[in-house]
Length: 626
Image 1 (cartoon, one colour):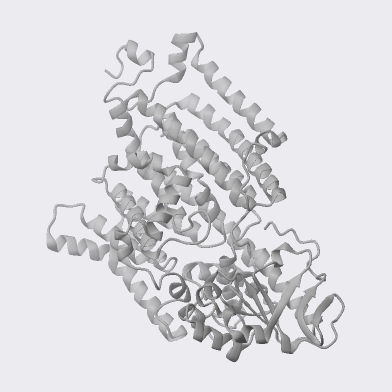
Image 2: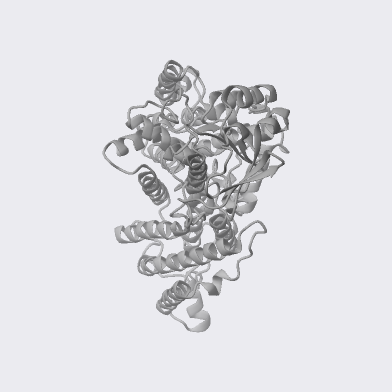
């Protein structure tokens, strides 16, 4: 009975089969050790305060315990480990109000004060964990920045002023949003970073709203698990990278929330925006349409109507996008498609040893997410919101396997799924606890600890060695522009496989060996005959820089052509580690006979066989970490 006497079993806090209430730790310890529940929460709060404060003041106590990766610079690693440790200390401090709210309201998550404190804790924890990444923006985002800058300045949708229009981006809605902000005076990289962070917080916040609306009571174990799941390193990194993934994650959760509210119109609107945000969205639309239509007793006519309800508007938006793309760029597909997905195949789904499956398996193992996999079969697919959430996860996984994964660190294509996974886990855990009782809670605690440890290590390693920072690529472009200026070279060009930072700063004309900024290279990246003619006959770039194993250089091996050695000689930079590369060459025929100050020629008889740059005028003291 609701108002009847409390059983001895419940006083001890022992959960029974059919009881969704978690173990009452405070009462259990009170019976065993004579410590009241009030004292337990007071002790936990004080411990978090002391521990968090001590970590913030002396981060080296924890930072020195991280293991450094072999390829990481020791100075960068120490800085990253110290910064991440301080972030953890801030998170511990953020948890204190939530512990107190938990003490006041226990399982009753419907209390407005509890919800407010939970929301603030989630937001502050996310922002605290962004501290190590605050100055990092991925270089691919700068490709979109360059398009935004040129579009707002009246040059059209081009990577570089004067170039032929080519679609080197794949995030139309993100480009339009940044263009609007830049039109009203906002700085593009700063506004992209801030907007990414806001959308990351919004995605987590809305996911928690879905969870609260769906789950009337949340145990302390589930609460901890969801907090750690939402702060996984891939989501922290890519939701605030300057790319569109924070927006993608937010739209994913909006779609689930729309299903929860039984609003198919809002769902189709969000899917239509998502069509303009990510190229894999047609798969998501199909998955959501099938999930939505399968909720009722099957009748062929009703099934078709429900599929059209969800899919018609997004596919109309897709048709409009394709028509614009073909009329403006002369192509139905973007340059990123030719670079990244031209060899994609749905047959890869059947090959568990392929690159796509390997990408998924690595994601699960490195983030300890494999530990929550046994929970997912317990989700209630009869619930519309859960069914839509499951369809989003499955559709995105199909795309990732189809595309063969991605080369960037920390699983960029899968990161936006984490807020949706929070919702699925929140739905599955009560059934798990119902089936296994006390063991379930201990299992959830173990999963939370292991995921927290893996997340922290991953964030430290990524912060120490981030994927292609925009500022590094921009500085590389500036270095070559400085060399060209000292050599009195008019209109210099740089062939390089990283295009964003150099194109955005517009310091030197760029030939993108990565293919994103060049349709011709994107389509013929592995064609050695085409690449050698393009580089050594048609364009003849002033500089060639990058890795021999990456993109056009790795696929076509154009540097093995005799014309490369005939036309180009090595170019080295002293005391600049970021300028060290397998390919760093300059054209012979543009060199003046007498080397200007700061540049040395290495000669063999009368021939110049190498060029060495002693010092840059403009990049003497740049911190190359970000």
